[in-house]
Length: 406
Ligand code: NAI
Image 1: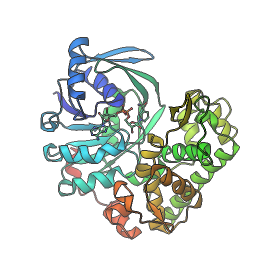
Image 2: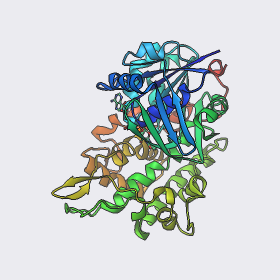
Image 3: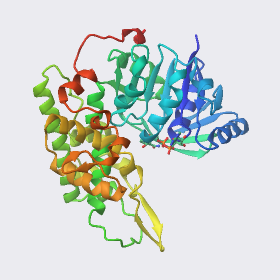
């Protein structure tokens, strides 16, 4: 039996997924990419090249999707698996566009989920929560870049393992075992979306290093782009350590309050680095050396723009525009519900919101006018931890949506 899959998105991740999955005869893959003229460019590329080639370190894989277009019903109606290969800021609009076309029993997943994906998906799909499963991967399994649009994409590196969670929770095992061979990565099922949100290390690393590199920037140009990960000095490493420690305080407070909760996947930053990049790190004695001697990070520049023959920081890059509203602010919002103070995270957020020209934290609370463009629990109206934990079904409970696991 052929399984129909819809892939939403037209960027690097969507190209890799489309190439890998449509190369297998058990899947029929339909691409939904409504942005600009992407669908037309992709159709032209596939027609010219005969499909999408994914270049990996082990060779090439050629796949040909069954359709590419900008009509949500053509791709999504009839699909059992719907994959959002998009930056987090596009999740909400795309889920709204496809919602009415999602068949009962389908599973909708984000690669990567970032923080609070379930808050957004549940809010939009609330009337259909018993018939649609949702899942998310903690990160994209690959570093990848399109080489020719609609024709060829390159996988530069693959993570050793990636955490995955789902609602209902039993779905996580089923999806992990179905997808890990086609995606070529070990998928590790974890307990809940709460774990996935708190365990997101991009929310610490990206805003934390941006803050460390540029919080005292006064407008000067640099001769060349600064190195991002190799730019981690002792003071930046200390900031990252303190941010990670604050997340661990939130984790321990939640575990103490709800003893049945499993947050074991919420690991300290240093431990996560070892798990993800053990073979790439030459000197793991300190957090700083784990960044600066990690071969997977070597040479990667900080996000910068050219100006007057030099380079200035790009504060609107995804390291802030995605990782703050769809990452660090979600965790900060959970800390606020739990009554935990996070002074170092707050310093980073206070600096980042100025650079993003947004207002999130006001008088130490998530009550700024721009929280409505975040996925913090406060944006969805949560004011009490118990209400949040119960309504988001983070505590182990009877599976009231078992139908979507079949
Ligand atoms: P990308 O920049 O290549 O893809 C962007 C695509 O998203 C656009 O081409 C468009 O198809 C879609 N999109 C954006 N805004 C949209 C909107 N408003 N409406 C409809 N569609 C919209 O991004 P990429 O590289 O595919 O990354 C996807 C996610 O994976 C991001 O969250 C990124 O941070 C993450 N990631 C990517 C890695 C990589 O190596 N490419 C590595 C690790 C994480």
